[in-house]
Amino acid sequence: MIEKEIPPHLQEMESILNKATDTLDTLEESISELQRLQGDIQRLADYYDSDEWRKDFEADEQGLYPRDMARGVLSEDGIYNLLERNKETMELLKPFLGETI
Image 1 (tube, rainbow, N blue to C red):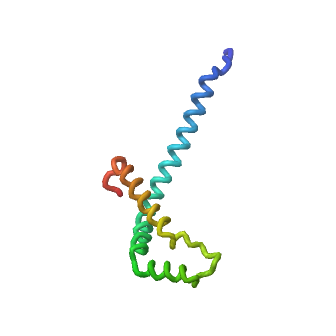
Image 2: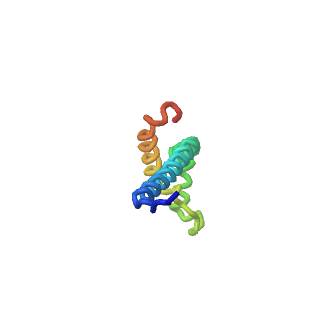
Image 3: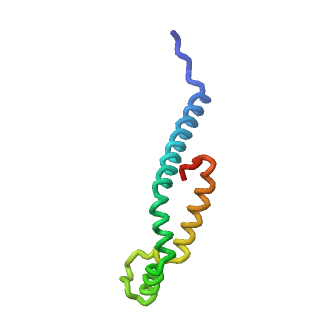
């Protein structure tokens, strides 16, 4: 049997198949992880709406926490933006996830 040279389009199509497969695998893993995080995200939302958050925010404003402390959770915009982004993303995914969200 005489082997033919591999046509360039076969290598290109193989590359597309592999890239698309990897991308979809990553997307599915990310969606599953986001679903698993919903309980924790709700806990963050509850904290953000609580007196505890307000007290922590005020204590930080008074300089009571170390300067080198990570304080993203005390950023009003940071939490709000994350919660809105999560809400929008979950709404976008709703048709694909059905009642699982």
